[in-house]
Image (cartoon, rainbow, N blue to C red; front, side):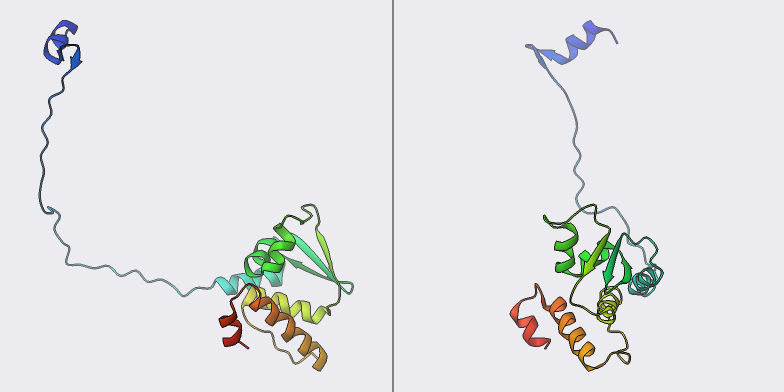
Length: 158
């Protein structure tokens, strides 16, 4: 189409004039299907996968040294499950280049139980712990669980 014909048809007093038709359809034109397809969702195995990653240490990016014993872990998992580890690993005072963290005042069995709890959301068997180790572990784990929770939560979960 020539420019002069376009200008004659669509320019009016130095304005562009556009003609359009709008059709409004009330209601829906989509028919309902009588067949419903069910999708089978398998049960979650996320905790199993996390537990396996602790056991294999694959992809571990931090090492803890507890009384000379080394424990390999994953910063993201620790930070996700514990506000203490989150502050230690990602907080303002964290040392980004530190790959080994020394833990003082804790027995290796208790730290292993803590990691087990963080990764598997359950307590390990405590048959190998003596009375003092068991008390220390329960006290520490309760502190980890209750830290950052409100008072009602702490009262309900003694």
